[in-house]
Image (cartoon, rainbow, N blue to C red):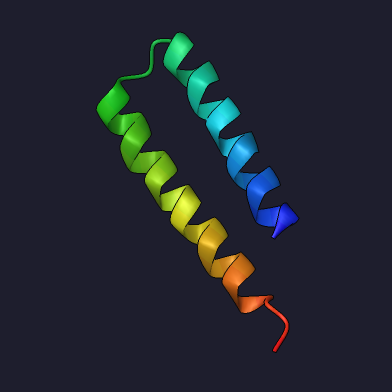
Length: 49
């Protein structure tokens, strides 16, 4: 759980940096939505049974 929060936190930090760098918002949303979905997939597989 903490790993997922950390990964999403890092992605949001990168997102904001890219936003300030002038990358178009629509492109960023597309890229980071995919990355966040990937994080959820990775972390949901690791849940203890």
